Length: 109
Image (tube, rainbow, N blue to C red; front, side, top):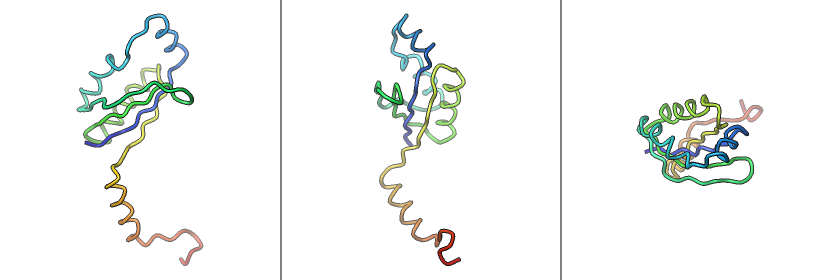
């Protein structure tokens, strides 16, 4: 199943709610992931640009986009979602790239 990196930054209101009543928010969002056929595979608290990182699996890009939209629409987290193709898929993409004949502008068109 395809995997995705979700990186989130809590709003100040979301942090204030967590400070007032600390909870593992993954327990709260896990059912939404599962409703889309997804799983939360790994998660971490982060320091810096993002407050959390989650690696999740979804059956397809539409399901991954749906969770991203749903979470972002909630307004508590600014979310960035990145597809994580396998190394094998990257090798296949590289092979295909070498076969398409693309040339940058000014390079022999």
